[in-house]
Figure 1 (cartoon, rainbow, N blue to C red):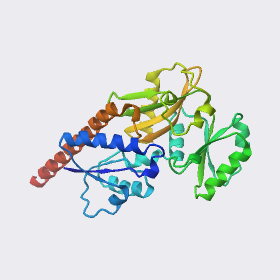
Figure 2 (figure 1 turned 135 degrees about the horizontal axis):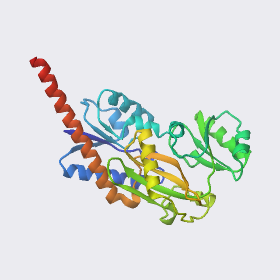
Figure 3 (figure 1 turned 60 degrees about the horizontal axis):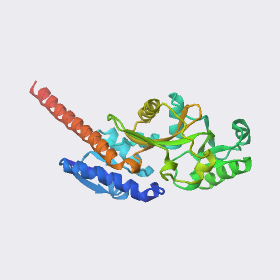
Length: 302
């Protein structure tokens, strides 16, 4: 059985190009050792591929054109990991709405049009400021996730989004506390969390200045794992990671969840868990195909 592995464009790996590549190659290597025949392709190459025969797909791809095409394939029975519908659900506006609707601990947030004046919303959330995040996609540029401390800054960020063709944004309350990053793989025991500033593993150094130095507040690790699993289930991804803010009283809120992150601090263990997860999905897929063929033969015989 051939399997296509779609690489992520560098544009969608801000500050983590090498790490994203490394985890994907590690997983591919483990699958190939188990006899899986993998063909690696770029996002653009897969979109122009001729003669595709509904082979299973593992993907780190995120471009909107690719996700739309993968959704067509998935509707027609193609096995895709992560699900293309889950990848889309990690876009900021969709993610925010789904997590809030399903009672996942998430900061107070509102989806706004980038043409709006959000002065009243700024007053509502209060000092020290608010977070404004592009709604239509993941963060690609630094400004795509911005902390603003004045109304003018807030409206300027929205205006910049509008000029870039971004129609909506998520405005979120600022939470004081420790930033915690986590990685997980559904259907396995793998769950890894850490304080990213302790390991210098973060996208933007300014976040530590905004959130304050890491205080290492105690919290319920198992409760975070369960909340992360619930968030991933709601969004429809199985290989995932995210960020949470842990407050002084131990309460936490998930502030982001992404499909197939870098797993950089735990790559070796993560690769084993991801490969196990994917191999299990392949086995289920093959068993289902065999069952369907046998069922079809039985019907023909009758």
